[in-house]
Image (tube, rainbow, N blue to C red; front, side, top):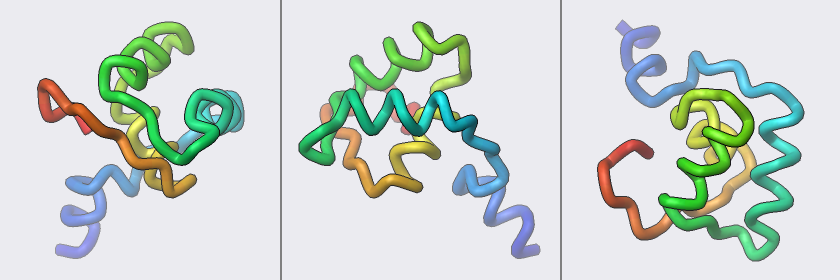
Length: 70
């Protein structure tokens, strides 16, 4: 049952180093807007949930969510 909960929270998502680096650069103050996070996912060619997981790992807050993607 714990595996299902982990997947629901996105903890099963592998985050490439390039995504971690990009999120770190895009959020120097520890925050990134939802539209910017989605755009970053597009630029990197990864699903939004990968950027969301990278933000979680780095302790970056995603604000201004519009669609509940994160």
